[in-house]
Amino acid sequence: MKLSQIYTRRWCTGQNYAQPIIYEWEDAISKVMNIPVISYPSIYRMVNRYHLHTQLAGPYKNTFRFVTNARDFDEPMNNKNIIPCIIDFFETENQLQEFYFKHSNNKIVLVSSPFDYYYLQEKKCPLKTALFPYSLSDKYDISGKKFEKKYDIVLTGRQDPLLYSFFKEYVKKHPDVSYVKRGQELENDTNKTKDYYLNGKYCIGPIETREDFITLQSQGKVTLYGVQGYLPGFTNGFFHMTPHFLEIIACGCHVIARYPIDSSGIDAQFYEFNKFSPSVNTYDEFEFAMDTALRSEVDLELYSSYLKKHYTSVRAKELEELLSAI
Image (cartoon, rainbow, N blue to C red):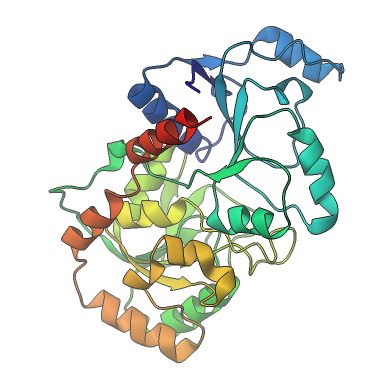
């Protein structure tokens, strides 16, 4: 099977700085495979808006698309010509039959997490599935790059609650350490305000774009990273790596991480987290790791070599090989 096009939602309203990650992936796949990226057709949007039950709005060409939630159901996309890649998958066992139904006509369903792939295999998923792991756009290639570090610690995105509790204790004990985080109060920002503050005193501005996000992260010496799965709610028990880990490496930051080291930590194993941080679970471990990171330089050769395995162009070539067998 050869792909003819990629469906995108990038021209929809209400975009945020995280969604362009998907568009970067689409562009890289498009470049490697020499296929166009096109918007979903108007008839498809109309079918979804009015909840019409028809597959006639589906494409007649082999089409790749990212699906941002496994619970979404776009009936026209349950189509033999669609190759979906599921990004967020949190389907418990009693929800799997519905998931199978939603993709019953797809020739193959891709999932972005090794955890999800093996989870579906263990549940004897009747669909043909394959792994299409998270990647990082080649535009962030750090070969030969130097970083100017302005701050000791920069925290962007959602924080692991245990690591964040250690961070709060650490900065209280080490008032000379500079840190940047969202929101003015040391308590984690639950309101998702845009403004970031230096040591809770000086507003350094909002993150409005993906470029702002990457620039700010690259100015920190150290950051924190925890896999999904520890957070209460629908992610609980699904120990997913997120693309932010690759972004941290591409920003030249030391990372203090928390992840499972048993069989549920398959994402952490696939992405070799232990090359960058042990799984930190106590304050003493955290303090030692932070002290060590703040007084040492990042091994940029290691970082660059690591990322070469995870750029999107590499994934796109793997996808070509995968689909050639269908």
